[in-house]
Length: 84
Image (cartoon, rainbow, N blue to C red; front, side, top):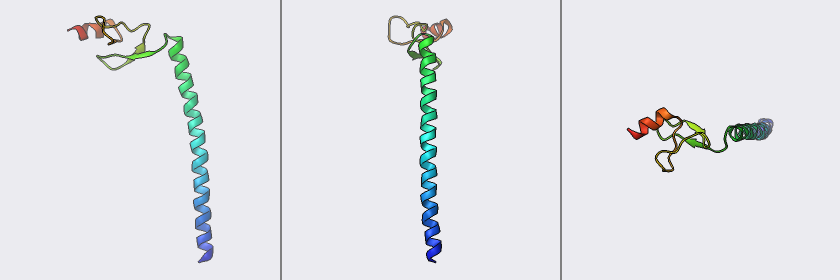
């Protein structure tokens, strides 16, 4: 009985360690992907803005504002849809 309890405690400890290391690895990979996407956005025009019509994201430098407001659209086609 004592042996089973010890094995259970060791198992719980090992599972906790494995989860901790997996979390550290996943956070590291997540940070790497965030840095890569930020570099991609900067190289194509900086901050990304969400299109008010279709919901896609476009670089702020390329996305036209709609009629002087703070709303952005991703293309001329979405601008026409927004104006209609």
